[in-house]
Image 1 (spheres, rainbow, N blue to C red):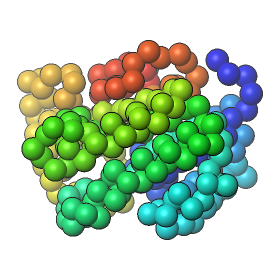
Image 2 (image 1 turned 180 degrees about the vertical axis):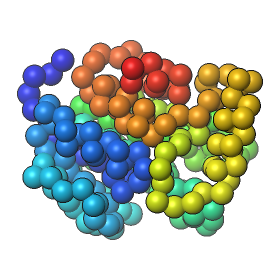
Image 3 (image 1 turned 135 degrees about the vertical axis):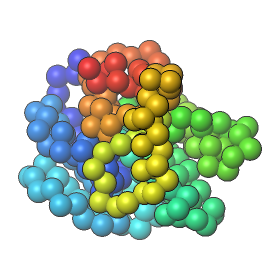
Image 4 (image 1 turned 90 degrees about the horizontal axis):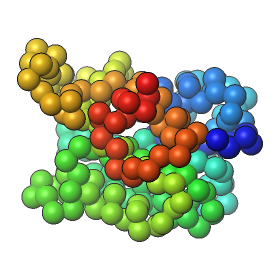
Length: 218
């Protein structure tokens, strides 16, 4: 376990998982500073927080500020929120890959990104293929400690309604006993816990699905 106080960088702190992650990092004494890169400000207040309100599509322009010990990439959108496929890819592929390239350039040794179950470069489904391509190109940066989390349906208290996810959550709760552990829904808080634990242990797996995320968090 590293003894020095760490600086964390979060991309996507205004989202569900990123917001919970931020809360936990504020309370974690092993992190001295939390740099946030986003287009809008967060509600949380802490002397640890250093906000960079930027055009996320131009993240690579902020290399001088993109320095620290660990990158937590929680950025992501949905088909309903971003129906335009070009814009969707700029968010779910472009931003994480740019972040990984900056991390590699600036010598950041840990990069943790949230992907999705089903990510596959060969998928006929655009959204799964995009996630797969993101994973592939993040791994190409050869960052010393790279972890790609592939959660199933993420649940939690969102500020926005997502009809499709609400329906899926209902069926998962109702028929949960029929669903393999790998596909069971997972709470955003569990993901946030696991992300922090991964900065403090030696873990051999790179691709981490929901079942293992839960084990790490526990």
